[in-house]
Structures are given as C-alpha cells and as structure tokens.
Length: 461
Ligand SMILES: Cc1cc2nc3c(=O)[nH]c(=O)nc-3n(C[C@H](O)[C@H](O)[C@H](O)COP(=O)(O)OP(=O)(O)OC[C@H]3O[C@@H](n4cnc5c(N)ncnc54)[C@H](O)[C@@H]3O)c2cc1C
Image 1 (cartoon, rainbow, N blue to C red):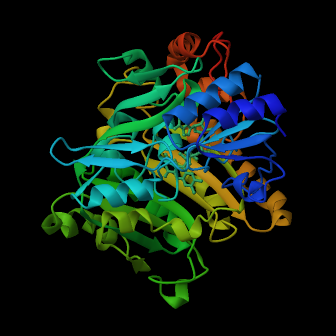
Image 2: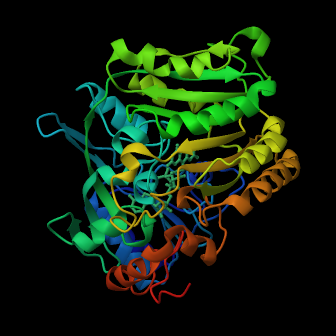
Image 3: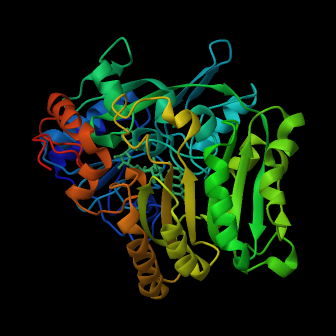
C-alpha cells in the first residue's frame, strides 16, 4: 500500500483508477501476458490522459518508487509490472486519429495493434507492426516492430514520425525530425528507456486486401522447404513477406482434420502488391514441392493480423529465446531440423522472420535498431497453461537455441529477449549503444525508466 501522503498526492492529481492491493480489481489488474510473471506492485494507475502520466512520473520519482510503463502488457520478460512499485498503465488511453490525406495515424500509448489496424483499414491504409493483434503499440514500436509488412514497408519504428513523450523530470516534449531529433532516433528501437510515449504518429501505406495465409508441409519436406525459403525470400519482390515456422497445426478451421494437432513446417505469406499478380508471385513457394495444405488467398489485412491471436492467448506460461542470423546456412538448417519437429503444442513455435527488403533502407546507425544487415530474426517460444509442463518446454527452448546460437549474428531483437542481462542488451544495439547511453543521460540520468531492456546512463556495457 502507498503511504497516506503519497496516496493523497496521487489522488489529488490523477483522474484515472488508482488500484491498490486491497482493491477487488487488483489481481486482475496486475496480470500481464506471461503467467510466469507474478508480481505485486504497490499501486497500479490506469491513466486517462497526459496529465495523469505526468503526475505518475513525478510521484514515482519523488517517492523512489520503481516505475513500470505498461502498454499492451505483452512483454514476456514482464517489464510492464514490478514488485512493490508503481505501474503506469496506459490501457485506457486508446484515442486514434487517421489522417487519410497525409497518410498518417496518431495512436495513444494504450492502443493495441488490433485497435490501430481497425481504424486505418477503413481508409485502405496500414503501417507495419507484429503478427498478433492484441500486442501493444507501445512496446512493439519502441523495440522495433517486425511482422507481415517488414519487407514491404520496413519496421514499425521506421514508420514512427513523431511521439509525444513525458520524460523522467515530468516534462512533456515532442520527438520528431524537427524537435528533439536525438530522442526520435532513440525511440526508433531503443525501447522504453527515454520516457513515457503518450502518443505515436505513424506513416501509413496503401494496404487493404492482401494475398496471405499459411502453406504447410510435412516434416519430411522440412529440409527442402527451408533451403527453398532461404534462397527464395532474399531475392523475392519487396511486396512479398514470408516467415518460416515449425508448429503444431491448430485444431480448427481452416486446417483440414487429418492435419490438426500434427507437427509440421510452414511458410506464412503476406503479399501486398496488385492482387492480379499475387498467384504468380507466390506460385514458386507452392510449386517447389507439393504442400500438404495451402491456406493462401485474398484476405482483409486486419483478418491476417488476427490470424495468430487464438494460439497466442494471454495468461499462459511463456518462455522464449531469440537471435538474429545473417544466413540460413546448411548448418543452421540442420539444427532447426533436429529441434523444430519437437514443438510441444499449438501455443509454441519456432518462427523465422525475414529482415530484408524495405527494412534495409535505413542504415544500421540511422535508427537505434541496428541489425539491418541480418537477414533473419528467429524466436523459439514455448507456452503452456500448465506451469508443471514448463521445465520440459524450457529445456526444449534452451537446447534448440543453444544449437542455433553459435551461428548468431551476435545479438537478438530486444522485444524477444527475456531478462537476459546487460551484455545481451548491448549486443543487440552494437555500436549504437554508446549513443543510446548518451541520450539516456540527457533524458533520464537517474534511470527512472529501468523496467525495460535497460540502457544504462553511464554507458557501461
Ligand atoms: C503473442 C506475442 C506476439 C508477438 N509478436 C511480435 C511480432 O510479431 N513482432 C514484434 O516485433 N514483436 C512481437 N512481440 C513482442 C512484442 O514486441 C513485445 O512483447 C512488446 O514489448 C509488447 O509491447 P506491449 O506494449 O504489449 O508490452 P508491455 O509489456 O505493455 O510493455 C513492454 C515495455 O515497453 C515499454 N513501453 C510500452 N509502451 C510504452 C509507452 N507508451 N511509452 C514508453 N514505454 C513503453 C516499457 O518499457 C514496457 O515495460 C510479440 C509478443 C507477444 C506476447
């Protein structure tokens, strides 16, 4: 519980809900996506506006309270909550305004990608994000953002035009090319280290109906499928995005009954070019070897964005490990072939994102997000409702990752890291780390915002 003085200070300046441990809503409000994270903050404030955010930042700083900023609550390391501190929950701040003329959207920090895609789709527009619609705009954009539109329109952070930011001293600043451009550079991949972003402005692109869906192969075709994918995707047109996965086929539509609950490998396709060219562009993927199931076809973009939601529900125990790689060499493919077929259940997966095409347009020092030269980002993720099953799943993730890690480009995408220590964070930013530390010193010298993949103000790493 907060001391009386601190509580009075908060309630005098905040319009949103102030939830403390004796509140009936507390247990629901403190939950995050990953059930492995079971923390008990002293207070959760569901902010309604920028004024609430400013008040929370002041109260946390002045009372020495550990501060977590929560957007969609999906961070698997659990940075959106803490033990004994203040959770600044943005989930009530869901305002969105699309400017179809300028092709931009402004979304408040509590939006999920489902909220934003819904709003922009009405105008036949979209901006790149991740592949699950319930994930928060805040965490994804600030960490980078890779998904179905990466090869076509770059990372989410490449499309961030500006942000409204409340910094550690409670000041409200705009980060854009014109104002505080150092801060905008840092927000493009540097995570939640620099302040609370109350509103994000993104560039939009003409994306409406896409030709998309999964193509499944039986595991005896996995070696050929992976080699084909490697050679095909690096030279494919930018309108085409393809991820590769080892998975267990979900037990429902559109999958045929005989394949359900079977371990298989898959290509997940999203083509954003002219629909009359789609069949021709995607055909090589289907012709190299007969798929067991072809689920591709024209779909509204938000439908594709929601396609994984059912197999990524909130409230499961999650354990993930990840890395960037520059090449899907035969040795890496061998490691995938050893562990990929053992995905334990429909909620778990090995997923390889392609980082090429438009994601390469920015240089590796042009934004905080450094790995422009990696061709792929892989993640091995295990999830289960049963906590008792997790030690076995965790071993599978660790063994799989350990077999791949010798071929890593050096770092991992920060949004896929668990709490893995300073060296892993520094490796993910490479030579951008010193500049990030310098900007951190300017905007958050006391490291108030440290519940994240933390960049230390003193630059030690
Ligand atoms: C099921 C699932 C699927 C995913 N798929 C993808 C994917 O396809 N592509 C991809 O790139 N990532 C993906 N991710 C990873 C995702 O990018 C991270 O989990 C991200 O942290 C989630 O953002 P959030 O706002 O929901 O998280 P939260 O837990 O709410 O926030 C995480 C951290 O981000 C920071 N933060 C969030 N909002 C703000 C803000 N407004 N201002 C300042 N700091 C803020 C804070 O440091 C906070 O602690 C996925 C995650 C999950 C769980």
